[in-house]
Length: 360
View 1 (cartoon, rainbow, N blue to C red):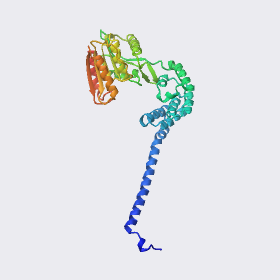
View 2 (view 1 turned 135 degrees about the horizontal axis):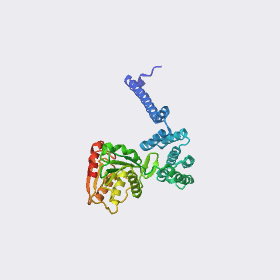
View 3 (view 1 turned 90 degrees about the vertical axis):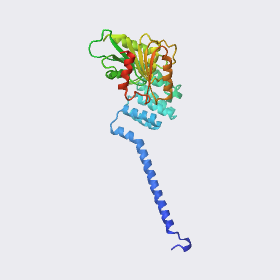
View 4 (view 1 turned 90 degrees about the horizontal axis):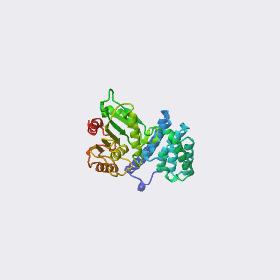
């Protein structure tokens, strides 16, 4: 039955209703597509790792990235649980799962995975003691048992802490012996793996010694002591003693080169043990803010480098380091345009700095 004339709607209004209806349908479809795309993106990483037949270590790395880049503890947990299933002997996967669960206030389940990590032979007590995700579980029996087990397991796993590797130029050593650059790498890296830099840094003019940090965090990951450089000095002395069994070295030209926490330790070594070092190249000092005492260094050649985009705390540590070492020494300061990293043209810049530091 047709509508009475008084209530008939104009054609233009019908067209408007139709357009609104179509736009609502399209918007709903777009929203569904966005949801589907988001859900796929959330699962794609896991699926791709499965398709690539990835290792447990790959899943752990993906979980770490999920936490650090997206603050997604639930997503990270999925990767860690998968790694723990893939490798029933992987204690670190269980440990990381416990950390994610604790961060989500799933303390009972977290304790279960701490027990699993202990049963699998967890040894990384250096990480455990400073893990803020587990801070509120430190009085839990599962945490205490894991800490005791990790401290017991650590020595057998950390025999390469403080270990040195050497890159010695070809040919006969100079009459006075080779100058030496001692490389102290940054937090979480492997110093002994850096000796390949010799060709770029000093060529055939000096020996490069790379030393692992004196505390081992995980496989191929080391750090230096948080509050003292005495263990670092001990590691350097041991390395030089071993080096002298292989070649002649010039004890009057031993320079330190450090990055980040390694640079912080290098700055304190030359300040506290100046009789052993002729200079230092300090790249982006960073770390645990060891306070400077009385600086004993005099007549040393020191280059301090930092990035313009570094965090304010690193900028302050660089300034503190320069202020402590400037009196009585030849100090150069250089800024590059990047952040907390080797600058892009380091192969061009650093050899000149080391030439100055070693007085070559």
